[in-house]
Length: 293
Image 1 (cartoon, helix red, strand yellow):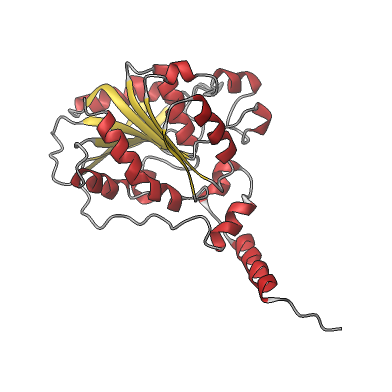
Image 2 (image 1 turned 135 degrees about the vertical axis):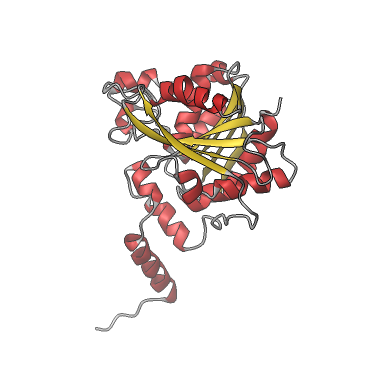
């Protein structure tokens, strides 16, 4: 007997095939295949990918240093808005990359240099973005001795100060692993140091057993580095937290947003660089205003 598929069945089957063959940043970050999100992406239900603004990037400085906190040499990049002198005394926002990324990801994956120029051209007070290699250890001290959090505050911020940037109070922005790292750094350091924190699709779990492999050393490490239950530590830090509704972390992000006061929200989107680019302009505008004083 010959069977015929309906047009709807053909569309869903074709989408499923496309999902099975697709790859994405989210697979590295979450450790699971976000099937619903991938399917919605194929069907056009996760929103459009962000496209880099058609503006010139500003000056970019890069280098490296031997990090005693991380036990390795790390690379770094500082981005300035177009037209700003690299010697200008500007406030700074640290950019924390996701798992599998490095200091080049801000430009190569998110076009942050162009989004920064666009934000300033739209009226946001000028500021700089600074990215550094944090490894894959979720931006906190690990049993191995790797301590990317200490590298940020004890090594990278002093380097940025020597470049002429204002570091007495700073902003921090991250995506996925880096989004979690941004929230953790803000909670640990408090508003006296962190004026504002932005997180896009932060990698959050309620239980250690739910966490991606390698994210923590065990249940104790997980609990010591929680961001849930720390509303008091984040109370005076200006927060913006965004996440796609088809992101595997959406439920946890929604839960965190009930604990803290934060701009942003949950939008159409998945755990992809396209979603992060779409949200980046709003994140930079928010952070630039909050760190201006």
